[in-house]
Amino acid sequence: MRRSIPAAAVFLTLLAACAKEEGPVQVRGAGLQVSTLDVAQQAEVNAAAVRAAFDPDPNLSLLADPIYLPRTSGKSGGGSVAPALIARMKQHGVVRGTCQTPREGPRAVPVCPAALPGYVVRFSEIFQLGKDSVEVYLGATRYRRAPKEPSEVLAFERAYQLVRSRGDWVVMREARLPSSN
Image (cartoon, rainbow, N blue to C red):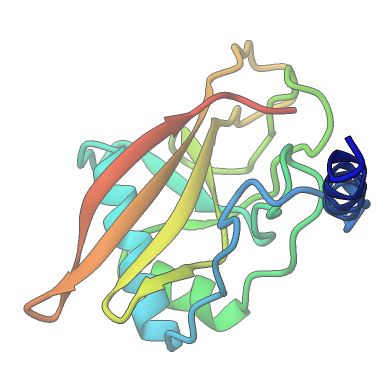
């Protein structure tokens, strides 16, 4: 019986150490480092994620949210997307402009001044998986073009794992994520 008391004490100490509050739980890119890709490569990764998420349609407008998805759950938080990255995505036709999505409430629909109907896409930072592989999250919310325009909430978020193959980024895995507030 005496041997079990020290073992139990060690176990409880380890359990208490693991339970300490160490900040918000990472949901996006948990345990991964942000990649060091240059702006051109980041734009290519985001473009590959957009191609996986949407069928090509010249009548669909995609606008970039200028704030990254946070690493934690929900929509609040996240750092600013580099203007050079947004400019590069616009230059290559990945997005047509910018619009910020609402951060609070699951029923909020963004209002974006745009010529065509479409979605606001919000990317996470790009996380390094391996030497030639990365992970990125893409959230999309359908926008309305005028405040009084009828709207229905239509939003989704997906995680993409991509690998660099023959100079291009290719989606290897895709996972739909539950909607979060």
